[in-house]
Length: 477
Image (cartoon, rainbow, N blue to C red):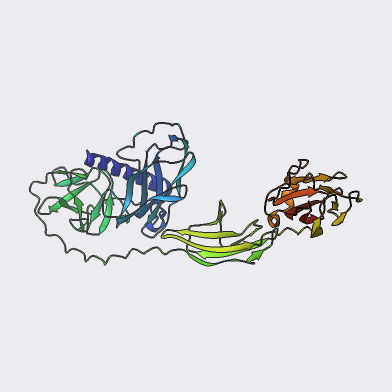
């Protein structure tokens, strides 16, 4: 079954080659003008497929290139999930990779292929939707994914071979007589300089072409043929039954093979280099709130680049720049992505914290208040019981502060030095002050008869019903 599948696949590739060549390329067009970029196809899943979170999806794909596929990269949302180097490059390659989505939303599956010259294919992309409840059941992948016809792909599985035109530039010639030993191709086939795939290709046969046989190798796995037909030249074609059918070859002699060609030293596969970031800088390192900063950068050797900051990731080009107005100290990251991996650089822009303008103080002080006296916190004046503009009256016998002239107070209980204007603006006023006992240390807030806010601290009191008070009134209404 595997040989039949391979035969069918190679036959389909060859038919595609003939159709493309006959329809698009003149007979004299040299091989060097054939397309050199790889082709990449995602066979499954299909675009707009719905998948459930946690459902395993088999991504099947096919790539092809006339020079040979050397590497395949599969990514989801820009993050590689499968990178495969092909040690012995081939004209076509099919594979699969299981992927299990872990979050809902729209996701893009992307496939790229690189040939032996490190030339990339155009990305093949499939957009799928991941839901939290389930989606379409994906069809099983075919055992033999469809491969697009690529000019220059031979019928043999290995090695990679480019097809030169016929030496004469003309048809192979008349077929041999019916009684002569002959071989007929069952598919498009290479003609080689000796009995083996390590001999150079000297020509190309189409399906159904018949040539005279003049010899064979000892294993009868290769036929020596007259090529081109009617000439004194010789070539060799495969005797494998999947490629050729022989006739009248019972007495064909064994022919000594020509010397094998000296293999050329292997060309080292270039190791991809990491991208290089020439510079990434900010025109200023420290900002005040509301000010702007301009970032600029340049890089090389990258397929794509991104600028990341806060929760933002955006694609950028190089050289490039961007002006921003950060509200807080921010770390900016420039990421350059290439075949060998990622290179990053960072710039930190410090934003000074906004400082509130201090609220001026109208009055503050510390004084002893006797029983029956009043205090005007706006002026910091202690007066008699009928003092003009008084905010509070101290009743030493009842141990209570009594609001005067629309002033009001509230107990806070915090440390005096730590009570802020915002604290006093937010407390609930109009509540009665607690009794001032022998061990009381009371702090609170007040609003004066003129609408200003302040804070006070009763630090001590005496047996004669007097007490010592510290206060501070802000110029805020």
